[in-house]
Length: 288
Length: 326
Image (cartoon, rainbow over all chains, first blue to last red):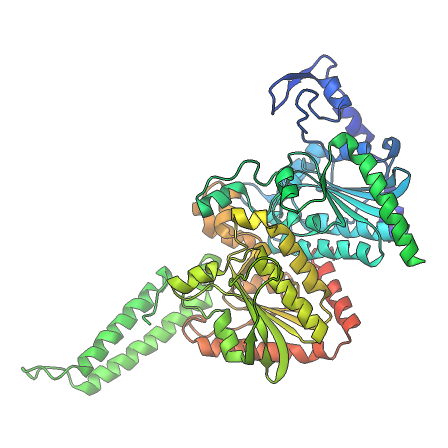
């Protein structure tokens, strides 16, 4: 299992690159339109200090915010078939991949790392929305299976952060088959009696929602995240009704019994640590 | 019922119209003038035309484009899940409801016998006329439909009954209520149930295999597919609208998505392609239903011979390999 032994260091260059914004830069909140000092926004984990709007975070930020002291070890994920269909829309799929790789420094849309959360061992898998909208193709499926195997090997919890437009259309039916494949990854945790916790972030839709993202032992979402199976435009075209206020948002899903809790970004690591400690010890007892 | 023709079947439609009108001439009383052609010539001409129809259909259906297969797969007169159940399953007892919210008739299912063997059958049913299409919601299941499927899968597991699924859906229903009741969770849980059922599970894509709504019933030991059925991660129309920003590019998207049975077999994503009668399943429904029956019958014994643990391990490995390099 070479992927277990070949660790790669966090992409420090990437992280540093992001910090190169001038200190005096201001950005506008998409929600309340107020101006925010960039430094304040970063310190506030990309949550608007005025209206608490949770802005999109990238995969590296997620990992840094989630693990204790921002310390973690990334694992290299197995390679997946390159353009299995020979797909071309307005652009060739290999070109789209190449561009996404150049822009993000990621191989594909999943990052996996291990470390501790609240002192508890955990493996964290993050869907990188910045990489082709976090869509799930063979590489993401393969990565989730690798993450599950690592968690089982380390007797650790698996925490998955989702942010995805759904299936990677350019991989056709191979991308659809990642739905059962990702469900198998989830089953590996269940069989090992280890906690599997899903944190849904904005946006999580399509085949990702309809597979591993809705099968957590505990389902958490960030505030006001768009979470659903079908896209809102498709729904509107089908039912020709006005969509209700807050439709497919975290709070709507919580009201409809689809989530355990909506947790603000800053509270997430603490909540995850507590949950893993409670569930993890239960699992140890069952196993003993 | 009058036969419905697809746009690329126009030459066939014209030939069959001529055959029909010749038949009418034959049946009509002789004209007073006595100038009507002798019946024998008319019969010969009909035979000749029928031969032409046959050759035309063979030629057309031998090289259907992916976009044409999409049309054939969605043909209104193509046999549906209930047609298969009626012909292949004896002692069929339909079962209903998800025990939580509703009975969703987009998913039909129950217990019965397949060649004497008790089985659970689950299918998506589109309906065959306006009234039944509305009743079955055009084959688009809501969460309660997938929860009913899961209930039947679990029932099959408890009683050791093999599961046969018949997939024919444009996809899971995209609606407000469906989302409110957890469409995504219902599909995910149905996939989970398929992958953990300790009994043989054979899925057959008989028409359209539409994305998540199809895989919810098709995470199976064996995936069979009719020759002109399609199975896709997204409809070609939807794909074209998103990637080409132009729904009119659907035929191009159909080609690119590799959604035909032949393509999917080449990609090792399905196991068996079941041949259809000349001119497609809708021309000879009974023949195609029997062919599906034979394909299921030949797949089942190997699976029945396996112990549940071996069966589950094999099913898991099958899906773990999909998208693995090498």
